[in-house]
Length: 165
Image (cartoon, rainbow, N blue to C red; front, side):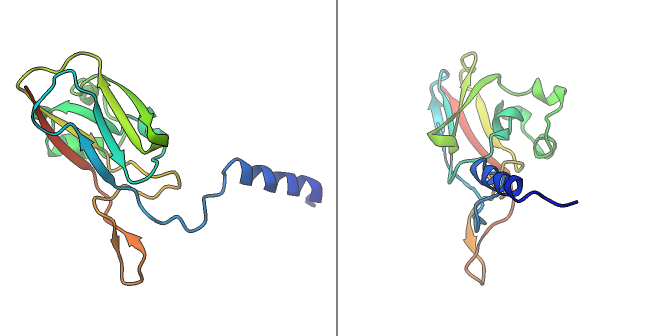
């Protein structure tokens, strides 16, 4: 089958304009820079924010790959399930219902609980190991340089705790 040169050029231009090709050389994985709030005595009406080192893929919102859960619900079995999305209906019932949105051009996720959190209770903010950046580099705990100077890290989930007042 012979390709028409004009159609081929049009396809090439559109694919580049639509971002179908990943930016060349992006091999740096994303990491979590900050989670807030933290510590004890957190306001039960707080908004939780997770800030990444770079914009993350929009599927983070669609698949609920960043969640808030009562501390008692988070154990090894929960984390194993959470790292293999989608989260089951049973597990969905264990998390805090939140409105989720991107801030800072996709590098921060805000979780606003639909109801005030229970007072004097431990909560966990969990970021799934399924989170990736816009080109598919997986979330890592810490970005390190390998022997060739390339940014690398071990794929992981991130767990952050706080207690309400």
